[in-house]
Amino acid sequence: MVTLVIYIIYIGEIRLIELQNPMRLAI
Image (cartoon, rainbow, N blue to C red; front, side):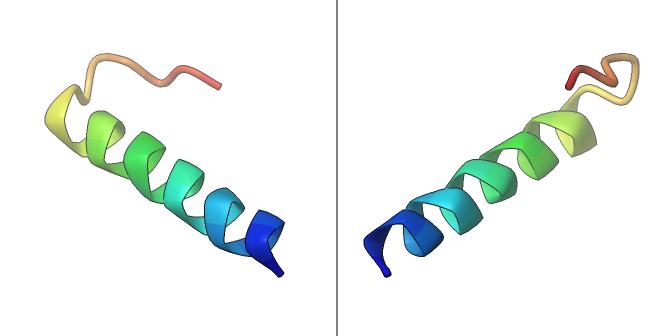
């Protein structure tokens, strides 16, 4: 269960980074 939360937070952070840096489409 904990891993699922961490997974969601991890994806959320990547989404925020992609939104802030449209030029970067990493991972």
